[in-house]
Amino acid sequence: MSKETLFGITVPLTGLGVLLLALAPLALPFLILTIVAVAPLLLIGLLVGLVVAVFAAVGATWRGVRARTPRRRRPSRRAAHPSRSRLA
Image 1 (tube, one colour):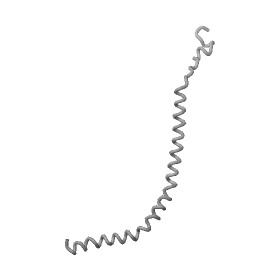
Image 2 (image 1 turned 30 degrees about the vertical axis):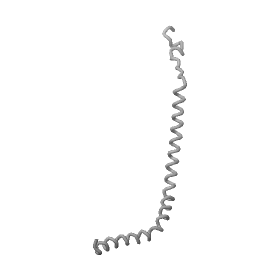
Image 3 (image 1 turned 30 degrees about the horizontal axis):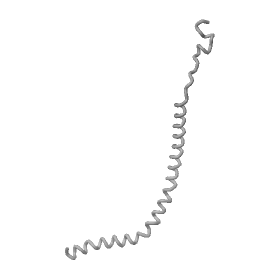
């Protein structure tokens, strides 16, 4: 490798290194601010998911209870009202 090629590679890398070291102390505050800004949105999503899960659990329980209980048949109208029977 010639000196000119090596110099052409090292100059941009040195500039990026200086820039990285200058901006590194700002990374942690930006990360913390991002977490603080996103946390309420995550809590709202978690709350909505919890409400939906509770309703789904109640619905599934209700459906299971209804499936296990025997159904009573309603008496027919003709048997319930003798005046409407064919014999009367």
